Amino acid sequence: MAILFRTFSTSWGYYVFDTSTNSVIVLNEFDFNELRKFENSGFVNKNNVLESYQERSFFKDVNIKDILHPDDEYLESLISRKVEMVTLQLTQRCNLRCTYCFYSGRYGNREHSDLDISFDIATKALDYAFSRSIDAEALSVGFYGGEPLLMIDLIKDCVSYIEEHYNGRRVQYNITTNGTLLTKNVYKYLKDKDFSILVSIDGPKPIHDSNRKFKNGTGSYDRIIKNLASIEEFDSESVRRIGINAVIGSNRNDLCGDQIFSIEEFNNYSALTLAFLSDTYIDEPYSYNNLLSVAHEKEVCKLLLFLAGRISKSHVFKFILSYIDIYNREYRRIRRIENFPEVVHHSGPCVPGASRLLINIFGDIFPCERVSELSLPMKLGTLDSGIDISKARKILSPGRLIKEHCKNCWMILHCMSCAAHYDTLTELSAPKAISKCEGNQQQYEYLLKIICFLKKNKYDFMLSEVSL
Image 1 (cartoon, rainbow, N blue to C red):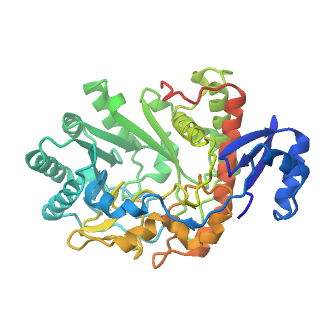
Image 2 (cartoon, rainbow, N blue to C red):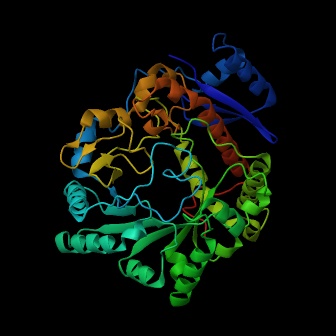
């Protein structure tokens, strides 16, 4: 048993997150200092302040007997009856060579090839997913590469196959593309079939072209902008159908950080998202220069001031508005509990083989497109053999690998680490998992500070969305 909590302070107040009740408590300075003394003492000597809060049912002993995902007992049923998302890797070819791509960047665990999926494997993958989605409200079918639009004819064949064999089933199509092949005619087809389309653009032009180049080394920005302009001229509503995702590259010492956050060209698009580079599967994490970090913090501050009613939304970088969903969702997860569960697992892992799955060009099955196809622990099985349940259980509950560590973690209910963060390609590694913990805790404390600021400024977290 342990008393688990995390004290943190801001320029406007003192707080503590109490694990036992899943609550954030506002403190005065004296109580904060006393609790921090206890926190830093190794949780040995109690003090009067702690005991006064315990009398009000806070800071109770947390007695975690086991680390196990709550879906573990239902795993076989979920895999066989409730597949919700399948992503088909159509090709390992791409017409770009992006500096940070999983295939052509620093990751070293994938590489581009000239291989494509066959129609036979594609339809076998679709049959696999549809036959195992009986209890799902809908099946999301995604098309992935390489660059999936190199395989537009196969995409059309797959959609025709679904319409012929699974008429009446609810299907949601999605595709992520670099946009260079997204012509007006291709868009018209995707629109007719109600595809969700995500285009990767890291603009403005100098920044985008420094990362996202054709194989001959020239930038891809002008081609994408030309395609999108042609599409918008054809269909003015395309700005509501097409999403834009901007990846923030690292080590941009030759450009001021503010330039990264000035993608004015896409302000009329309604679905804008921002992503930072993944450190999974690389030996040395990406590092961002100070100018970019400061610029990002400034944009977050502007967003918070908007949500607090201090400035107009017109001052906010639109790509960062997607953070609002993160703040709302996490606030709703901080709800007081009276009895801490004895069996628990952190909330990062999804259900492998059910929540989502990737089927590659060979018919191999993986939990998602973010894991390495060279990973032995991440290969769940094949279309012929099915999913190895024992592997799926390990991926579902990776916290069991560092059970004692997780039992004593103050953010056990809120950690978003998944098995990919433990993966060395040959095994799930406990040392690698633990090496991520301090960073995860710092990130979550930062999120708690944001939530406390918004709460103090009377922001309504129960808003389902903020109109863009």
